[in-house]
Image: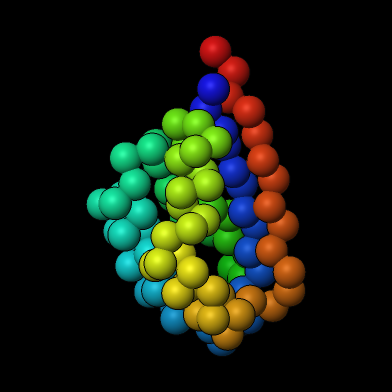
Amino acid sequence: MSIGVIATLKIQADKTAEFEAFFTELAKQVRANEPGNLAYQLTKSRTDPTTYKVLEVYKDQDALTHHGGTEYFKAAGPKFAGVLAGRPEIEYLDGVG
């Protein structure tokens, strides 16, 4: 069964360009190296320019676990810490059908 993840990220107002740049690189790594990742899309709120949501879909739990253990994802941790304006909200969803 596929697993969906929605990560809501609040970014410091003066750091949005920096965030978008490093996230774009992270997304390229995910798409190139994780066959179990079916979607990894950064989206931005239309009403709040500092709120982003990452829409992720993984083939299964193993694929999600693999994603969290990759070197490039771990390396992104300090970059996220430098731009976040609060704790990320992570919601996990089970695929239907």
